[in-house]
Length: 85
Image (spheres, helix red, strand yellow):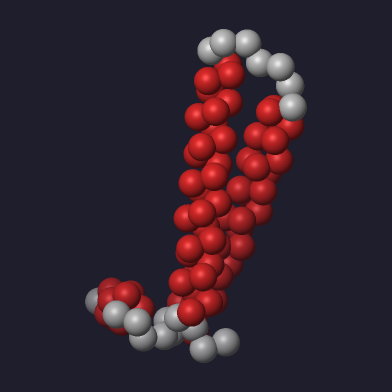
């Protein structure tokens, strides 16, 4: 129950408790590392000549990559704006 209240407090604009913030930062960091692999692989695939329907799949992958990067950045900004350190 206490964890649920901590998350509710974070959603209302108050600071995230340090122990929770530390764990969220670790997860965000790991997510960033995983996304970097996907971004680089997507880029390398985009440098090759793909035939249909693979070229459509590449566009779908690129769209997903861009959305994931945006969400990850929003998460990192949220953490930064709602922690004390």
